[in-house]
Image 1: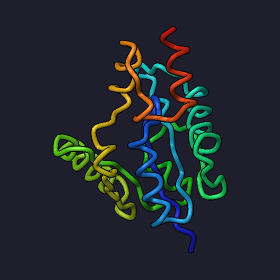
Image 2 (image 1 turned 180 degrees about the vertical axis):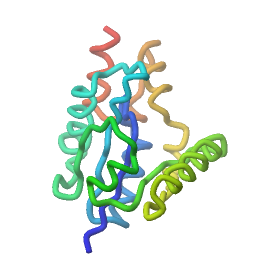
Image 3 (image 1 turned 90 degrees about the vertical axis):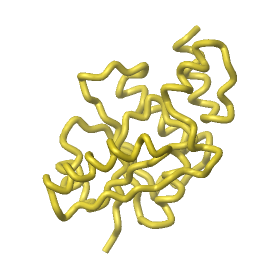
Amino acid sequence: MKKNILYPGTFDPITYGHIDLIKKALKIGDTIIIAISENSNKNYLFSIEERISLVKKALFNDLKMNKNKLKVISFNSLTTDLCLKMKSNIILRGLRAVSDFEYEFQLAGMNRKLNNSIETMFLMSDVENQIISSRFVKEIIELGGDVKKFTTKSIINALKDKYA
């Protein structure tokens, strides 16, 4: 049976930390579904359409990743409901630091209560990517800093356009 792994997040914007987790998950699953949240309660820098386009540009244009093994979608439902829709029983979540663990532990527990056939898989990015967050990347670019160690060329160009 084909193993689909659901990787939900805001990806506002996608970073090398996210990409590192996607690459690791590809070693475990057949298809990674990058599910971009369109939660109306959050203030995003990029619209849902922009985030979908940017994730695709970063993965397929900048990094030449396999389009057959990755799917990029948006969602505004419970993650567990999306898992059922996408025929996935694995949710991928990233851990950067100990501070992430408590929130992620609670989220995994809640998802398990909502559907006990869905497992949450935690992966850590490589050490050089663990400090990267979308928030920091946006802040650095806004203040005129260099973010080429943190994200792809397409993302950097889009960020520069937003903050120009």
